[in-house]
Length: 137
Length: 137
Image (cartoon, rainbow over all chains, first blue to last red; front, side, top):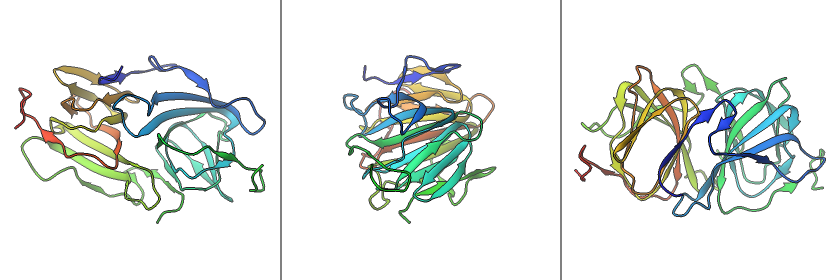
């Protein structure tokens, strides 16, 4: 389906958009669901992919780095982001730019879920998971 | 500045991001401000551009079409979108995909501002403004 459309937001997410696993199970992430709002594979679609991630309270994404940048916008709840060695608190509507190769992790460490939009180029490299000390695993 | 950063959302918008004119003044739009959250011109940045538009109550964007698609997410208020001949109501967190060449207009016709994120490819064509009857102006 390639024509224009509205994806309505309901109580449980967007109509017609399923919550999926963030990644295969692993010890470097916890409590993360992925919703692909608009795939880059859409015929004649944009060159970017629009995803929503929701991290359950206490959960976190992988600490990782890659060549492609991220543009993130917080849509729900609060938490924090680790960018290299620094940790920044996050609240609704804050925008995060994750520069190329910056090791990063999103954490729902505020006793609430942390939901955020994350836009990436459709053509992008595979993330490299990092150890807590910043070396590749 | 190309490194990772957090743009915090304050009462008046995002810190360090100015509200600018949507376009030169014209009779085919009214009450629209543009905030560029992350430009595609960012060195080593993504191939897409992340903008926020806010339409004042009673305002509207140009009725226009172009080859590049839009991915839109409503962040504030309510209103509607015209997609070709149909009009769809919009509320917070609704997502709109505007397919290539679909004539479209966003309207703050709900007595409230309508604020939305709009992501586009960095490399894109110039919009063609349409008459209300759907012919090019």
